[in-house]
Every structure is written in C-alpha cells, then in structure tokens.
Length: 99
Image (cartoon, rainbow, N blue to C red; front, side):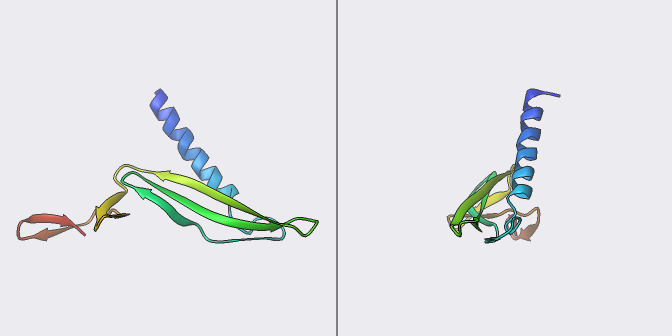
C-alpha cells in the first residue's frame, strides 16, 4: 500500500468516525441540529452541526461538530456558486452540458 493510499484511507476512516461519534442527540440531555454544508469547493464539502448538552449542574454546553467530505469533482460552479455535480449530461445543439 502506498503512502498516498494510506493517507486517503486514514482521512476516510477519520471522517466516518467523526460523523458517527458526533451524531446529535447521542447523549443524555443533548439535542442537536442536523448537519448542514458550511463550505463547498470543487473537491470538498465541510459539514457541521451544533449540539447542546446540559450537564449535571444545569449548564448548557454547545459544541460544533464538523467533518470534511473529499471527492474529486464533487461540485461544479453554477452562477458563481458551487453546486453538487452530477454524472448526467444533456445533449444540446452545440454539444453537451451538465444537468
């Protein structure tokens, strides 16, 4: 296994573990928001959620949980914004364009 392959596998495993361990509502007295995309580029998306946990003293503690999803070509520019890419194409009079 090459160093690059090991690094990619490590990133994938850490991302998966972060997502599983940071699930909102996992603990007693905790509530959370759903994960939302807070940053997006051509090859990544950063997801985040906020959880609120009440400790035994009644104090509410807010925590940010985030992970970065990485894939080649996962987004494309449309109107100056990154949007999810698709493998679908539409045939046009001058060739083809993404759907």
